[in-house]
Image (cartoon, rainbow, N blue to C red; front, side):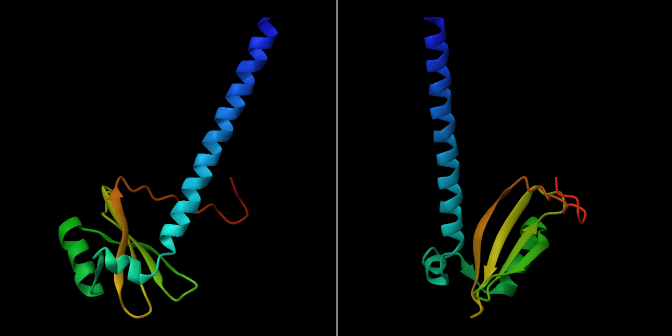
Length: 121
């Protein structure tokens, strides 16, 4: 009887682990879909600004400056702004048409250094 209960407990734990993994994958897919929104979606939420004014605001109110940037396939530029101490951060997307939209913001930014060439951990 003890072996049967032990086996049943392992089976329940495996099912729970699979559920957690499924939820995690769902969250990642959802996040990827959110990043791929068009400007019209972001504009509908009134999160788009003139780029110069937004950068001035991030610097003046939060002391945030760009620490990373990347070019998306559609020609948009994604930038990460953080305060020097990492207390605040903002992710900004500038579309080819010039619209600059806040995609996300938060607290407790932690930069992760790139691994040295040839050393993946």
